[in-house]
Image (cartoon, rainbow, N blue to C red):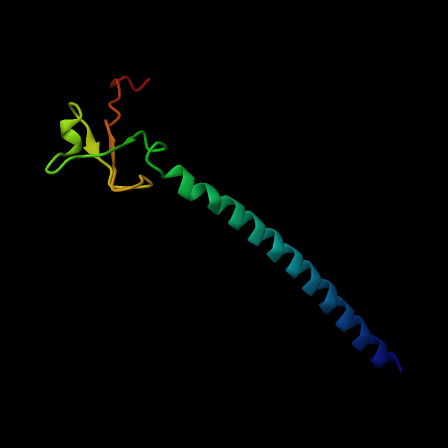
Length: 94
């Protein structure tokens, strides 16, 4: 009779551990999916310090102003290009 009780204890422990593992997995999935939302918004044109411009035939971002570079199309609409002036530090590392 004693051996039957030990088998019941083992299965209850297994059920409790499995339930805790499922709860941890659900929390991880929620954190990963909510954190992933900001990845796309943080890499857009304006988030990268640029603006969307319609460029004419043969025109480049350098034609907009001195130092402007193309960041590709990023999230710009309708054939626009993302152009930005690179950040230039002051050289003061203090």
